[in-house]
Length: 388
Image (cartoon, rainbow, N blue to C red):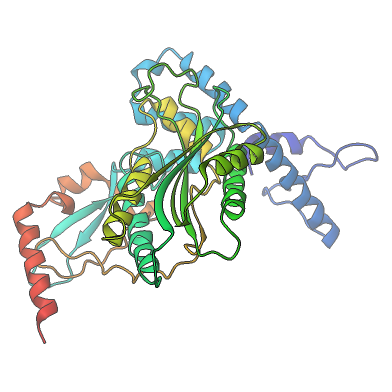
């Protein structure tokens, strides 16, 4: 329970008629529940409180940013510490802790092969979506999840006559201010409705789309006035050819005039090589996830706040619930090729240690082993697979 909230409710006495009700914790911090009615009241209180906090999320972040920038030591702080403090100030303490620990802490790894002397470590990954260290993790996961299944779905069709594989971009007007997470969710719902309305009823179609914002640096559009906070959607569409005029009119109608543009570009030579065309398109779309749309610590924190509770990648039509590819094999030892006994996700804090401490023990980052050893491992693995 937040400390500020505890201080608020501890001063509250038994609720009286006409006064707002507050849950009052006991000495140990627990809220006594004596009946089902009490449980419903407690749930309703915290639900309403969470909704109020979410509604003012952008305003609270802007206030925290203003207060942090006013600190005398702010300019001298490391960039990652700045982002962590901003997240902490908004209330995302767990995210702030993960952000601070990313690639600074690690998990020790020892090869299970008794004939191998590997003593290494794997750096901790916070998996936050605005982290430059973890962008590759999300990119690889999404490419593995969608690239091959989408190509196989397209190849399974008996004919490609009258159909297209195209990259779409849908944009909406920007207010020039940081969007609210609910704005991104609303845009996701509108895009779903647009796809279902724009395609012919009964036709075979599928789409995968991602929601993005413009980059902090005005590289592509030097004369822009929206500070890069323009929400837009990148999509990979497969199906019948779209009528651009009708599609754009429908987009503006669904967005109530906020829709600005619709851009359609057919994938090059997609009928000759489905797999290559799909892969190129997804690399373009997921590339925005690989590299965050910001460079300053303040912008990275704002992006993390913006994507709170927002799913950025969606599949609709025939691309919905595609068969999942087989799970990847455990990561091999860079020395002998034996499977390593480590789960490459976020670990418990008790399992992590500072990288400096592990290096002091003589351990090495397994990602920094010589490339020659990695090539030898790849050769050994290929020979092992070919063996009867």
